[in-house]
Length: 324
Picture (cartoon, rainbow, N blue to C red):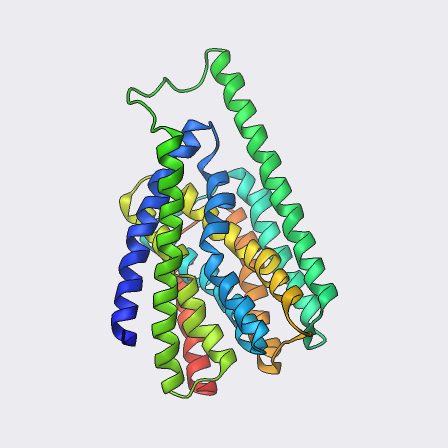
């Protein structure tokens, strides 16, 4: 299959899979009395991060450390500046209080952790363990918050408060869970087709590993988050699953994707000088800027979303004109 048909097939699979994930994730959240945000932060974000894990481990074992690191850095920049910004540009985003207090600071903390660990120009085994520990702590916190959400919903309903029961019968778990997993599988397969086609085109143009990781592969492996978020936004319903996926993926990409990638690498994973000098700083700045911008009014406006997208376009333009 040529690169262009692979791109088109991958994009179609992503759209279908994203719609399934949003729909079935919402059904599971309702069935287990969980916040859709928690479903997005855990199951969906881990599932849509599988392409980054597969690419990172393969690249590290083949000695292409620049591709592995560039993919994670570029993906997180895409998540925050392009996807979050585009979603707000289409429709302003109102954030839950817990997102402001826990999830956004966790995303900024993960970015800072990677920057500190990479400042010596490489990521060693000990650095991989630090990232994994951060990810495990964040995942444990998500699970505990999910348990509290479920307990609070049950108490409210047992006391006679809360919303009236739905008139339609909830989808059985035996149906919703397999469909959710199928949607994730379709997303991962679609991302693989999309990335393979895009990388082949980029190599024909003479792009280096780090640049391919920061641009083509980063956008390709972020396609699950992009399509999931856009589908949820266009449908006009609750975007909690998509936003939870976006923020959760930004934490897990560093902690539970790059961390294990470093651990399985045959040696220390080098961090290219140009990535350390600019791209890591852009990633950290994007994550940190989100906190005060969103906390001030607990929302991301269309103007702010447009500024995020414009910043990403400027950053990509600079990359392509100076490193290609």
